[in-house]
Length: 137
Image (cartoon, rainbow, N blue to C red):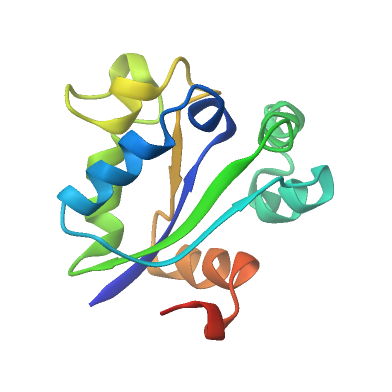
C-alpha cells in the first residue's frame, strides 16, 4: 500500500463539489486515512508551496489557496500517487482527459480543483505538513 496527499482546493469546495470528489475517490478504491477541512493561512500556503517560491505564479497560488476553505486528505491504495495523479488529470483543465477531476471540476490552470503529490518524496513532505501520525487511521 502507498499513501499520497490530496487537496480539494478552495474553488471546488466553494462550488459545492467536495462531496462529488470524495465520492469519486471512494469509488476508485482509495481509502481515506486522514481528512480535514481547513482554512489555510497565507503563511501556511507559502510554506506548503515553498518549492514554487521563485516561480512567477507563487503569489497568485498562495493567495488562492488561502482565499477560502479546502479539504486536505491522505489517500491510500496500491500505487496511490500515480493513481491519484491519473484521476486528477492534467494541471490545465483544458488539457485534461475526459472523466478526470480537473476536466470535470477545474476552471483554469490556477483554479484546477485538486492537488496531489507527484512523487514519494513529495508525499513524505506534504502528509506531515498537515497530519500527525496519530491522525492517520
